[in-house]
Image (cartoon, rainbow, N blue to C red; front, top):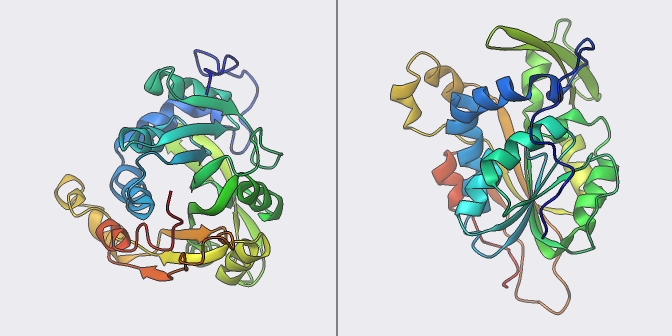
Length: 282
């Protein structure tokens, strides 16, 4: 795929007040935090990579790629990766990281994606779906761009997290929004997420035509215990993110490919035990 020319070389700067989820306004600060943090570098990304398994030669769409750390990891494991993000600022940082050998597109997951039907073997959606109130149109598009037997590998804020921290506590069974401030290097930015009950998440996947293969609540990388002695125990004993692998049903011409449902909870290495199963052979 050709180099995308509309990705700017430097993150966009805005003189206007920061809006919720405006990644362009704090792209550099977020990217620096994400690079080596306990939650991202030693928990979420290792879990996503373990669930992806052997990706050599696979065409992968990194949906909501940000500055590209997961994109780079997938590429380094032999995948042919395309990245999309709604933030031009984040994509500019991704371009610096990835060079010209990865296609990057400015694209909003609420819109139709600029790809042909069945263009990808896998989609990775890392911590992005919880920004959307309605998953339906987005999941329909992700299913469209996946080939039969393709996988969507997704991580989201665990539905129990917001339910337990919100005051007053919301109706668990309702889809509700919540806002909070993130702080990076002294910069405070407003964020808005949407919390759904677990059944609403699984219903959204099945309504879009996916079938559930893996539901995982992994542990952080044990190597983080010494690096983050004050916070490792907290992350290892409380809910944080929820991980899914859902599949597009294979074509009738591939009868040997049957789904295998895995329930992961032993950490990235535990999630890795189910990788590659129920996946259509190339």
